[in-house]
Image 1: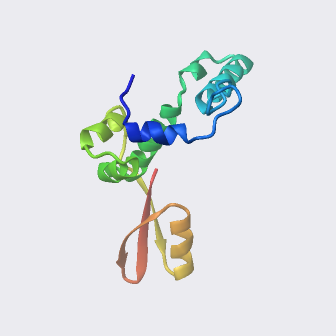
Image 2: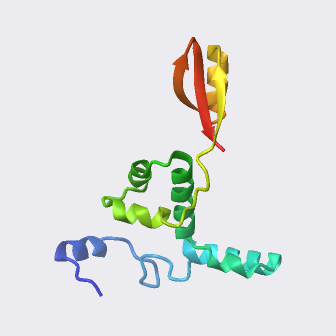
Length: 138
């Protein structure tokens, strides 16, 4: 139970009610229960019980892990997740094991080549003798 103010109670009393006295349909499925029923159906169809371990929050962990894997910038992950404390963000990345620091490197001689490399996910590193150097984590 939570305490609510008299002002909030007054505001809630102005909300139109259904014939049965409810404001919302008590029988309507929530997004979570729809997700669970779809997940259960898929688990049965594919015969993979590990799918029952998936939850909405699992996708948040996946997003944070992939962002960190791509950028290796924990502060960027923290900002995108909206965390105030870096310790919360580290929960998402402490299990991530990146075996190597290998990069695929390319040189863009023209503007079009540089544009194509950036669109392919490469990041600009530097310029040497007129050639622009790009890299992308393997």
